[in-house]
Image 1 (cartoon, rainbow, N blue to C red):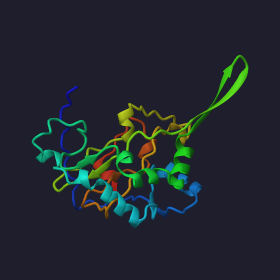
Image 2 (cartoon, rainbow, N blue to C red; image 1 turned 180 degrees about the vertical axis):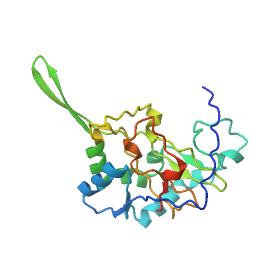
Image 3 (cartoon, rainbow, N blue to C red; image 1 turned 180 degrees about the horizontal axis):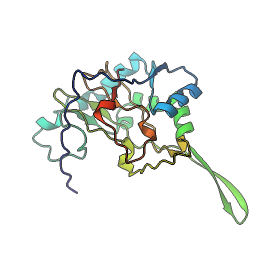
Image 4 (cartoon, helix red, strand yellow; image 1 turned 30 degrees about the vertical axis):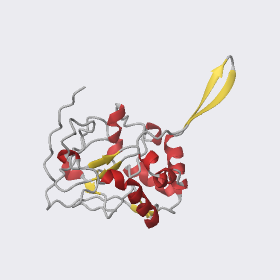
Amino acid sequence: MTRLPLPVPAPIDPSYQPTASIEKVPSTTPIEYILAILERDGGVILTDLVSKDELSAIEQDLKPWNQKHRRHLDPTVDGDAFTTIPPQTTLIPGLVGKSKTIAQICEHPVLEQLRQRILRDDFVLYREGNAEPNTLDPLLSLSVSMNIGYGAPRQLLHRDDNVHNIRHTRNPFVPWSFKQASQFGCLIAGCEVTRENGGTMFVPGSHKWDDDRWARADEVCFAGI
């Protein structure tokens, strides 16, 4: 299926100052406290989760792919599967197969505890009166590197679970819980990430909205990592 390019959104006014921010806590913070922040805001920054040596190893592992032409300069590129990503940005998919360091980080005890608490599903099947306990463990669905190039416009504000056609409905009498979460994403900063060089835009609390409530550009804050 041919996908038409998405419109390029207007840049955020440089004078705009966010009224919210993403809370930062050490990666050694108790899991219950981290989960409480995630439940409230939908995101958190964990400091010192990955070491400088690990970041250097990842950079070396990915060098063969990062040295390739950016897509908008490569005459052999015809169309793009990632229409939501600006062509000035280099995407490297399948990181767990390209970097042993990335694969090891995926098994970090903190990340393992978080995804088990957020995504694991325990249930019981009954067969002729016999109870059969079952567990659905989380599955890795995406491991990708994003190297944002000069001149890349910002992305349109979106929910990451849109790719799985997740629909969001909210009952005002039922509090939000992790049972309603279908994804757990982890972004690792390979350099100092700022508003100016493409830091992720984030709207705290928007994970609790239904699909009729869209995020606005004047509600975002920026992930400075």
